[in-house]
Image 1: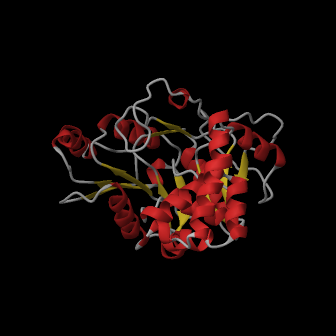
Image 2 (image 1 turned 30 degrees about the vertical axis):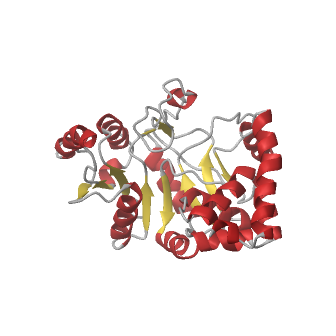
Image 3 (image 1 turned 90 degrees about the vertical axis):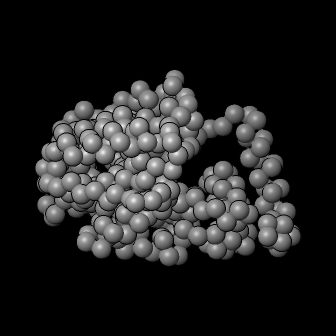
Length: 317
């Protein structure tokens, strides 16, 4: 195997989550051959200090990795800038990187899975990334241990520097969203695949606030770029306790009890880099919305897009 891919964990004050994340990675096969990078942001408000101080102390106790490298901020960068700056710094030394949020817990074979999949599939032109997560979907009837999908999950993923730099320059910006929305054909392809994704593009065009996942998945759909997913999730996310930026406080969320792989080893199967009909149908079923949301997506989003086009974007300026 080639050199093992370094890991980046951006964090601030979620001590318990961060500790669980690090400890799960430390027992992975190949952890002792893997460089760990921690981007510790500076507190923005008083409530951050307690967790921040605990993390600062705990960092000095971390072992089990080839090296532990801390990027400690002297002022608050904010979540997005903290991760972008740290990723750019790491990419000045490596041509690939594993990125995870600090509220993920990993299977013992996560690093085995990531490194082996990358060795096997990194030269496939239409593979953009490899994620360790899998949705809570029924995988019966599918006999491989990995699959590809025109979708992306940032809960523990690896990406090559060249692909990341391309996305940052050409895709993750409001101009790319507007370019898609100017095309009836491209917009229809996005809407047919995922109505909420078209809504996300409209929000980016309106506000200028770019959400990376929205832009990356839109690019993947329009350019047949795939992410490799495991059939058994290597990641459990704990970000439903109100401490994060997105999910709120949902202590009964089923993802908190999601089963993840307990095996220590992983050897990826040979697969074709194209969608599997069984998996595609299961993902669509998994994403099935309530009647209210189906009406919302079937009426409101097309109407919103039509207004956008007819007003030639003036309404969003």
